[in-house]
Length: 136
Image (tube, rainbow, N blue to C red; front, side, top):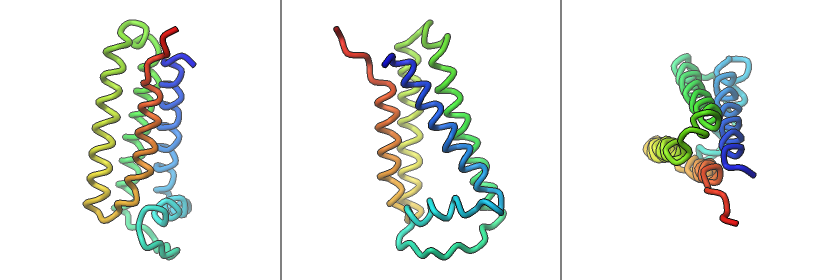
């Protein structure tokens, strides 16, 4: 599979999860966030109290940022990739690395270290997308 196609796939994955986070800010859909929270905040309680307006605002902002990150990846795989593939890959790599370090560190500081393994999975997918093609 061409490298720029893998980058577009990861852009789409980021957009999907970003938008999922945004819609989970809607009070009627906060259960989406509750499922995620049970997976990464231990012990899981299955007790989902209403989320504060501040929490929902943070979800909307963070989901918007991750959506934007995905759009950047998706668009970078087009004309930018054609013009400067090495430089484009470098920018995307450092963007993904900055996200991974900041998100994982913040998760640990918040007492939610269980969010780090899913972050590792996402980061490995970003690295997969950036993997150079095999030499023939």
